[in-house]
Image: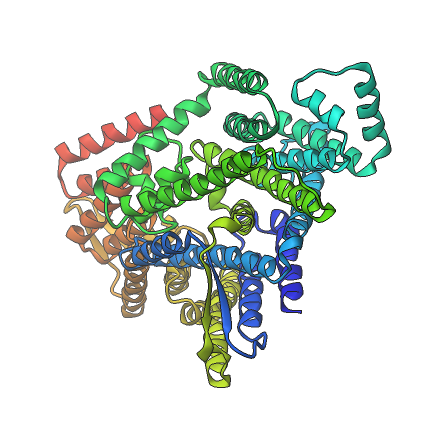
Length: 636
């Protein structure tokens, strides 16, 4: 019963994740996290009489260390709000990984491959829907991104599914037991008799036809995305699939011929696209990430904080929230230890998966005769599991190679599929499972209450930011309607629910200044002060109420900076406020920090130049004006 409910919940996540978990909208992400917590709570409370059983794998220690390092990055994070959100996402992915192991383990061993196949078929169905949407967009002349953020993200999702379709096709061919046909396929020879059998098989089997149509749709959609990284990743994944799959059934000459063809195709793809701008843009992003890693080698800047800190290190005018290299981004956000642990986790995983396949190959080459039908059936089921595992290993290899050039695994839809496939592969590698851990105390009622209270607190922690975002949106709406007192109340409610979110403090500062724009209105600021051109100083209007509001706004803006240490925009607005108060030294310090964190923003240099001019510092003023003109020319 428990496994069925958890299976349905995970199936729901797989179905809807490519359609709703595609951006930064906090509501669907919170719903996803709550559904995962529901599955976890149901697992804790499922009513085992003797003990609560946890399935162990060979990846447990590495996953645990990786998650601990990610949690440690929260302590020294440049933006705790972003880090907390990404930690919740990462924790949800890991819970899904272990829930997959649970629902597979609940079934009888002889049905493991069938349950894995059901999940794979569900994933393929979602891939067909997304591919169809992408092809329709191509026909209409629109950007081919289906429900995803951009074509590269769509391509990354598809290359995780295509090897699964191929593995299912092979399992169908094996099911029909055409020894002569399969031997002819293995040697790439098609006698007339076998060609007729092959065509008959395809034409008469609707399942095989559906898989072939699915494969065709996905390949066509992948082609029209024009994603270079996806083609490189898929080529590598198909190469691994052929190397492992053909090692079992195909002769050596055929194996190396096809692998050579895949290598040539990959080279041609790289040669065609190597001089495009996308390559040079990525080199700039990677260079900035390397500088960031050099400054934060052990702790990182905090999980999910690369986009906040990158403005300090960028070499051109193109901004990015991601490195476009998943491994470099892990190193920049968690530290070098984090990426090393993650890479070692992958090495151990692929090493054991390939070892199982090679061990099966050596056993399969044994010439012992299978006497009973049960032995024949067992060998056939084992071979289905092997081919499913080869397909999953190839899918994971493809997406990991693509993430050398992209950031797919940072987005929930792609990351969920990655961890689901990782769990399915570990469930198939039964020769290397470490067994189970039985917690007898967990079967007691008081222990279950403790666990449920823990899960309930997590639900509250996840739900509060959703309510805070609602209050923040209402506060912004009140600002636009010039209902400043109402906006102040709403922003304070958002701040109480989500104190780590820096923009709640920024919204509160705007409400104090009676400003209804995203940026503080310069005309409003100038109306609160007058300039004495002769002295070069700002003389503040002696209005105590205005001064009190300014002081409150400065306090809130400094609090926002404390929770987003590298936000140049906040420093820029703080410089405006200090200038209104006549605090010249603080004004210079604030605008210099804004320039330090975002050097290529001409507006910041112009502000500093104007400030220097008012203070009679002509040399410094001229230097900043010159920088402003250079930046504007480069930007154009």
